[in-house]
Image 1 (cartoon, chains in turn purple, blue):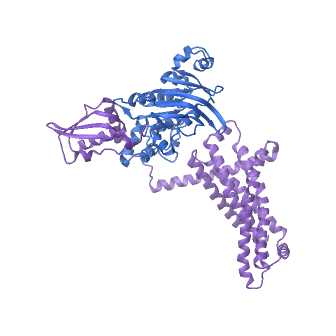
Image 2 (cartoon, one colour):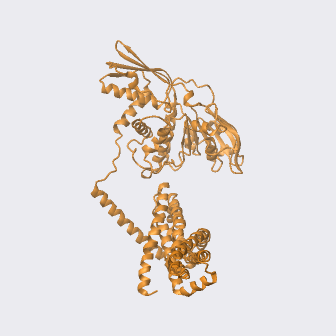
Image 3 (cartoon, one colour):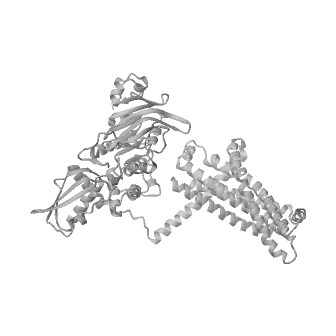
Length: 375
Length: 264
């Protein structure tokens, strides 16, 4: 086997005669080589009859068919008689198939008019809403089964997931939380120093981190890390018919796959948020020490004086909610994924976007609710 | 569609020549000292029970995995020992049909078939579309050009995969378990298609399978792999092996353990 450059090429000779032209094809015809173009050989000639001969062809493939097709089309356009009698029967058969494909191959029109598109989009949106309601309902029923029959719950899977979404996430949560605490302290330091209120950096960082930023940053990290992983795993399982296999055995995919993941996230998120709070406060403490020369002990005393248990609790409650929402979004998108590689990719992306959207919306809701409740 | 020898002027070298091939994954050796030749235009089956290394051998033949020893030559030229550029140039002379069709799910059938043509030829867009439609028509998928893989059945996916494998008119086509997951009628039609491709274009066909119906129907010659032996335990025409082989493993496999050649 050799490359194209080493191979003999296709040859075309046009011989004018008394009864029209004879097109003599020869050489090796390869689809991967530069194809001969009929227009270049025929030039300005307009014979009444064209006879094609290919006795000297050593090898041929689809490129020869394409050339003959081009010749036929040219003959039709110029009202020239095309004589393919000297061409082997199987070439003529294939040429006939090519002509048939050319004539019948009308591209399938997938475009819709505006009203149809709008209607379909509305139907689709309603279907998705119903799917979400059904999914949340199934999760609630499954959770109720867990309460009634805790021994039936897949604790082993749940512990594995807790390790994946909890312990394994510690490095990235540490880095993000530390940097958020550090950035907030810097910004606060610049403003508060102007009023000689340096020590209040501890108040600002402490409260913001414990009530908002700690749970929020941990949730966003987990939405990207764990929510996407849930969607990809379940999407892949769906594509491989593993979820169908569960259903065929009468095992609820929600019991088997979804609930252990949601429980794991629900348990791990408050712990991660608590950890993120500590690391965020440490970040602020380092800036206070380095920029404002506030000793760590003074910073800690000031932080303790401003934060009470209700601040920590509201943060942890939010974290629990965020965890459940991330788990729900990841598992729902995974179960809704199309059975294809692209579908799994879309499910992972959609899980992250949905989770972050739900986190922000629920955080806004909590802000208003806690304000009304005076928490 | 294969490069056709209208006037067969082959230089006599076999289509595939495998010498002392050692296949495995990591430290695990699956097959050792595998040697065989496949003649041009032959329909050659690699058979054996589940887990004997048929698909592993195929993956090593086409370069999806690198052999740990031995060599593979295609049409007289070294393949497994060639540099990456040469191998890539040689790959355009092969077609491969994967077990599940392995169609690209985000592309229509026409786009799936057109992709190799876009990559390796200088044909115009219109010509590529026509050729793609022709190939799909040849495997009985005329009219399904603009369907996505998710919209067609398993058998149709296989045929579409075959159309894609034939896109560049390869000289050798590899089939990995073409009958897997297909009903007997569809499976037989696929067998007929394989025979038709060979008859029309002189293509060399290598099939990995353990479907006895296909083996007896279309194989010119088979090699049989065995897990314990980690290699070839028999080579020849399937009917001859079934009736004359003294190896009980060969006999058992080719007669379904009945001792009689199935009436297929």
